[in-house]
Image (cartoon, rainbow, N blue to C red; front, side, top):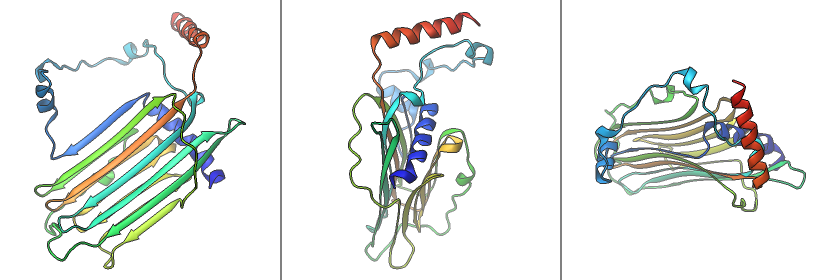
Length: 267
């Protein structure tokens, strides 16, 4: 497992570095609007303005970013879960941990879990007349979060957190299966997760909709999708990526600053 995932782990690490140098993205259904949140913090939403910037202006900007050579390890955790009003639940989660060995090569360990529990007899909250579709066709470079809801009293959230620090990544521990699946006795509730050379896929399916997460390192895509067709459903997609960066000495920081200044002056 370590040998199979090493190349994928390095590609995923490089992709994440290209996406952001420290970001949080979240989309929640059934939660207050952004303007309401700002007002509770004493901020006037009308004061927030957006000004377009031309490419010729952006091309002159300089700054620091985290390249793949700065990353010495990472931990990726993904989780999708669904709870119906009758108590039925579906869970799919997995963790990919990668650290550099003494030779500077990435070694990875993966573990996955899928679990489904039967609900009590009664209303599952699903609405066969509700339609939610089209979200699967959304594709962007970067992070995409789509929530489609047809129903009442639903709670759904997509969250993706990427952070950088110098804390050591935990030991690899014991490797688990690279893929896991689970289903209920009737096959109406399913949960599955798989890590492979082409990326990560997570999917939870119930009579009231689906929750999926997809990571494609080759095309720099992280996609989270919720489609809820029912009432009183509680659904969540969560992704967290912790990147361990190489510590840089004061001398190295000065060299990087001088190099960037020289590169900027030649434009």
